[in-house]
Length: 141
Image (cartoon, one colour):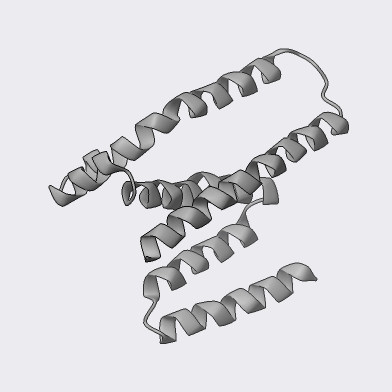
């Protein structure tokens, strides 16, 4: 089964990280592996995406936004973090509003609707990857 193969690869990767003194990454991957085994797939993905993925992007933004950099230089990490988070709050609130309207509309959504929504997510992924790659290149330069 694929879960067994992925788990074996993850355990090997975790061992390599701990041996290579990359304990934080090893702990992260260990927690993700545990999540994958304990939670249903959709819940595991939601927790991963909402916690690990989003937090890493927010941390990455703090290194590229001038207001965040200024706050970081002054030792104000909380202010730097909030400066990166606050601009994204309208999109987050909008997402919850749309989800609530759809949930409360009483409609019975077909598989086609969810496939269309997935295609939209995939379409948004490409520009997301381009921006992330650009930020990574700038951070490593």
